[in-house]
Length: 544
Ligand code: HAM
Image 1 (tube, helix red, strand yellow):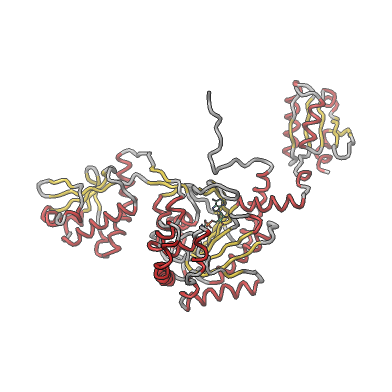
Image 2 (tube, rainbow, N blue to C red):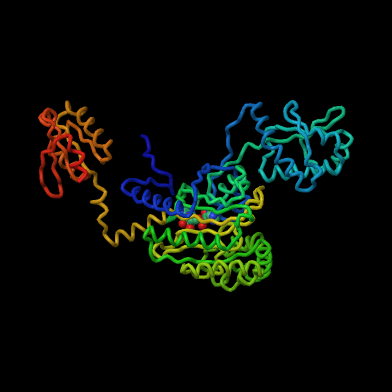
């Protein structure tokens, strides 16, 4: 016996009429974004795993526990593989190398059997350069999590003289050598990619910003997105494993004003406007500054010290984070840990003057615009890329998962993933949670949405031989912009009336007589009146 298949835990189907509400929210968001000069960006739903590890942060719950990650099995043909490798890794490898030493950036590559050769390197390399290369390769392998059984795709050929000394100490050189008479070949491995369903979209947007060199225009990029995200969290009301976000990012070179506190205030003011236009009432804007990366480092040290004494009394996650990434202790949701966390030093006390001034300018602009907020020094947000302003809009009606949206500034994110300096600020709102909030508000108001959603008319053909003629009539009316449901000639008249009454304001009867005479019978369900309408006037009649 076959088992009934159901949507996977934490995912769900969205059905009409609920999807109408989703569409309404999306349309409102698009309208508001357009007024603020945002354009839409659509990035892929999966990305290289390294992107999230390096942006959201390895120690965050999202990356360490909640990502849907798999190793991509698709294999390219050898030649394609080699070309792709050449194209993609030329920069990566020289970048890795140049991290330490500019003189290595002129490495030339040559295709060789089974891989590539680093020509200049072979000719000119000194032992220390070779050692640096080896470190770079190791770093490449660890950043990209290249397992030991990867395909060999590249080979560095090293003069034996250098190689021999380079193999000592062996720990530093690793394995994967092939000896020939005059050279030793060090193998590169092609990373059969580790891919991840995006748990959020900021990393993807910044990756796209870098990849398409959007910063070169010198302009601020204002980009919004609407799409599904994936996190393997424990499902509950307002928390799903596939959920939807409406988000936006403002990013650009500093010369475009991307660091200005005005950008923060404008984004927050836009959000207040958007929530108003969505008729969401009773939200609270919680606001904080987590400072520059230097401030955060300082605060992390302060926290680390403060945690030495109290961490042993905290949950296992906190004990680990107290050492690896103390800031993440503030994300802890374990009730017993809360009094301890509340007594820890506040990040606000670790901010330098510049960060304080930046934050003061944000709040001053919000005050001027009349956007109310509540300061919350514990709001560090569960993603590592934030700097300076962080915020959340919460709503009491949502229960435990009360964050309608969250966001903040991420001035170092682009550089962290290999891009140019490109400060930015953005947010993402949980569409599922917006819908829940609006549904409970609408349930309270008992809105007349049902009546408004009805179709203009239902066409009932009297007999199967009239089905084709009914299709022609429906086509005529629909092309004139009317919303029409089409019945079926096999239905008895009573069944047609019942079906029509459920979905449409009126029923149009199409029998043999009506077809011949061109005069149709239309009944209006609300008034109960029945009219004879010439076909040529039907569109006007139904439009009334
Ligand atoms: P986030 O706080 O992780 O931030 O998520 C933003 C919003 O997505 C949350 O406030 C919540 O409404 C919704 N959300 C998150 N997880 C779930 C879930 N499992 N089920 C339903 N809704 C959920 C970010 O994602 C950042 N990328 C925001 C950002 C953009 N920061 C700067 N730019």
